[in-house]
Length: 297
Ligand SMILES: Nc1ncnc2c1ncn2[C@@H]1O[C@H](COP(=O)(O)OP(=O)(O)OP(=O)(O)O)[C@@H](O)[C@H]1O
Image (cartoon, rainbow, N blue to C red; front, top):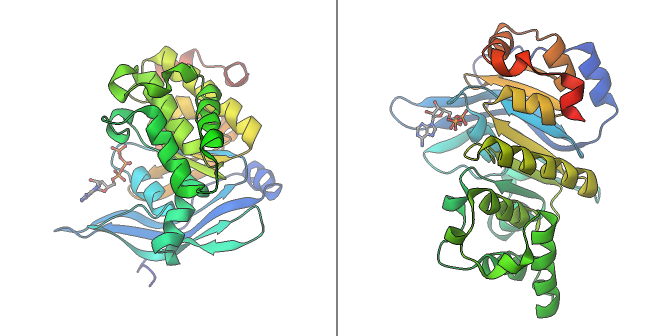
């Protein structure tokens, strides 16, 4: 099942090739195409190949509708009709040395893979958290389902530990979503995504709805957690300056294709694709004050 046209592949630099040569893959997508089978059909993702490496933050940038979320959901097998993966392979390279064909997973194996190996933080925590059960019950639910051998005591400790990790007072465990601020809700979502120590976290606009100060605090926290636990992150946003701050590498997506893929540093210094240049120049006020090294400290 291959497409009728062969995409030329994203632009990238020699510095990028040298950078990735030192890294170990954790998730590989090869020639992935995803279509919404509506009338007329929408080819949302077109022959995308992309490798996520252990412990890196890979930013996925591009304007609304370019296919970022669809691609990310495809990596975690979260796409549902009318979306269909019409071609491609996704391979998970586990730390224990096993290789998993993600496209072939189903039933229990697929449920175990999600959360456990690759977890997801969606935009808008209010819609993702269950409004009628407490934060504790939601965290415990993930642990009871995926770690049934844990004692009740250990489960309770783990819930408190998780909230502490994301900077929320464990005293809030019995709160409901509506009793928490937007930032706290999003932190709780990150705690849930971290509950099983996944090797990959996919974050789809996790801070977009938050004010800038809260957004920054959460981003710093994500970076610290990544340092401590070594998970890799696919971070999706239309906000390229934000990615320049937090991502190691950035994939720029346009109309379903990745047009440029490079280290954040290189992409900022020497964007090659006209579209990347346009994206960078569309944030003049932010980038006018932007100092690459200062911001990343
Ligand atoms: N359920 C659907 N049915 C039909 N087309 C859809 C559906 N969901 C998304 N699309 C289309 O697929 C394309 C890619 O959408 P997608 O949401 O992946 O983009 P995105 O870059 O993540 O955008 P955003 O940042 O706005 O979420 C768009 O053209 C969109 O209109």
